[in-house]
Length: 65
Image (tube, rainbow, N blue to C red; front, side, top):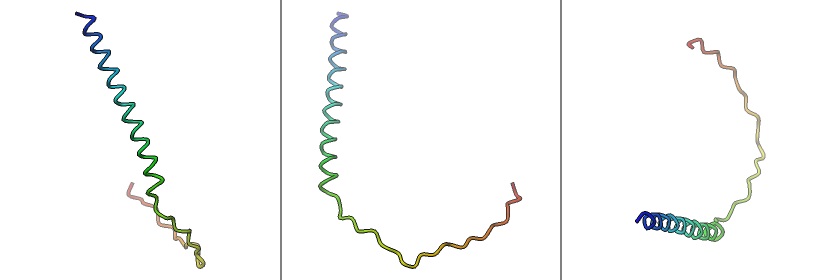
């Protein structure tokens, strides 16, 4: 009787491993196809002509700590 339960548990674990592996393989195939087939067209980077450095002012320290 004990051997029978061990075989059932071992079979269940093997079945779960097979399910997980097959699910991962099928999802990775779908992800690869979707990535390459549904990419939107990328716009070229814009060239800014009037860029200036920002002017910053020092803030007074917080004495409330």
